Length: 258
Image 1 (cartoon, rainbow, N blue to C red):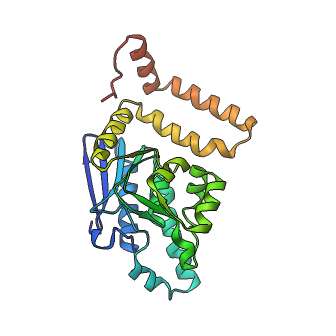
Image 2 (cartoon, one colour):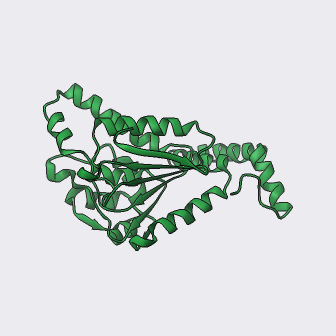
């Protein structure tokens, strides 16, 4: 990997954008490498939590300017194929059957803010800045819009998308884009606390939680009744569900708890 750093240790995968000289802006190569890594993580039993962050002072500045200079001259078909790769990456991260944490150590701009939005949880340094700046370039935050609208709601998304304003960490928190804002020196400690909470939960159950969160909003109440009842019945009879219930009744920690 040339554009990212990827490690796995003690059930936690850590992925760091590693282009600090351009504020971790992404290009074709980074998209390909992130896609490969998240595709691998999806099937790894030794990974139960994923942390995504940036090397240096920034989280991600979005699309690399040299890459944008190149795609400016693409045909519609070439641009569509290129944009679809980015959209596929966002959905791959969003739908990953393992919890993801964005460790937002600095600026997250444009598509970089999208990479925050597709993670399940986000902890931001109080110095972090956010912006959906695409409109300033005559573009729109298209591929990230489904995730931002779900996370922040249509009202806030209208404000952020249309103005392209620079958001403080506190405003991102109030909008629901991030879950916690902490002093820079507290960032790692808070992320580690979240990792500990996630590792104490059933890995299968967390994967099913993510399926629920994706599926239920698109269902009618009638559809959701049967779907959710089937999900619960299946988990109750599963090995993990049986172990969790037994551990609770026996007042001990379940086998998966770390």
